Image (cartoon, rainbow, N blue to C red; front, side, top):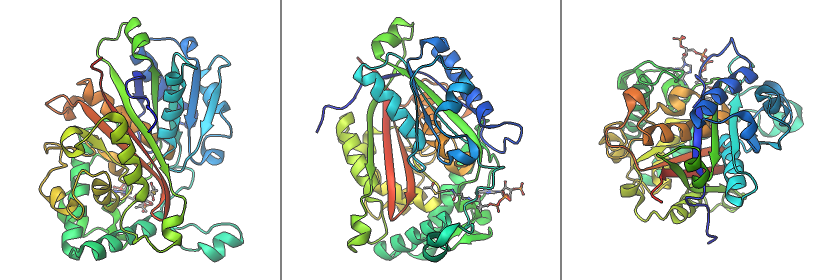
Length: 401
Ligand SMILES: CC(=O)SCCNC(=O)CCNC(=O)[C@H](O)C(C)(C)COP(=O)(O)OP(=O)(O)OC[C@H]1O[C@@H](n2cnc3c(N)ncnc32)[C@H](O)[C@@H]1OP(=O)(O)O
């Protein structure tokens, strides 16, 4: 395996907008909200940034084509700006661009920003009549909730879980995330819920009810990165560095050759193995202190805990019900409220997850701060559907160099 980027890049500053129904703001306003916080945290000026990456998913409708909207919104000084899109993993893709630019020496300081404006532009998780023959004939009823509901059925069939146990574990996932989100002023949904509310909620795609789904929200998040040496020369003493960044992309082979039972994500397993090797992690369940996964649906979080090798295969239901991933458990998952409470403004989500890891490791997470300062944080950003997807994993941690 290539040497990788472990400890070559430090996070100089991060910012995150308030997520939610931001009727009062357009995409540029959201970008500025996250950027102003990141810039002030980094303690630099815009003219010191050498290159920038914009991550956004449905750009034509919500943000505008090309990389120009980012350059205009932030008044970037004619530097190279690149726009990336990789399904729902677009935010981590922007981060990857900026981190690799610094790691390669092409830039001293680079910016990654992810944004999406979904709420008032007609986007929804349920099927909308697509345009054109392919959409009408081939995918007339394809929806994210419907597609991830099949993951639940396949997982249950494979592991022989009873429908009641699986539903209770999924409900625990949602109750836990709403509890965490209620302590986060930047989250969209901040109401506490109980198991009964989840189990009696309107059905969206059996077995996924309203509270098993992430919301639909607007939001933006931003990171400024540099080398550990430059960060020190700028006066930073407490450094958080990138330990690993890995991306795995489906090539269709599993689904096409019937070797896939539909109950897990091959991309997550492959990206996780590579990321642990790059970060030098041998026992992820013991060594990772905090994790944010792509909980677009409660079942995705449950399955992902096994795909990341944190829970044993078939053991996630038990771990979840035992509180292993609760805020006061051994390995908190979605301590900020996750996609469940932040919603999923596509380009922003991956960077929003890294933002929480960064705050927690610097002891700056306010009411939801983990008591023992976390050392290693992992984020998992998934794009696409179970049968074809991209998975981007980042591991960040305290710098001990
Ligand atoms: C790889 C991937 O990431 S795929 C994932 C892509 N994203 C998605 O699929 C989004 C999934 N979620 C959804 O589509 C929507 O949230 C739905 C369908 C579940 C609900 O949408 P709608 O019925 O239009 O909800 P609407 O916006 O009208 O809100 C109605 C109420 O429910 C609440 N609500 C909406 N969604 C959620 C949710 N997911 N969880 C909890 N509460 C919610 C709202 O706050 C509102 O509450 P209020 O009446 O107290 O104000």
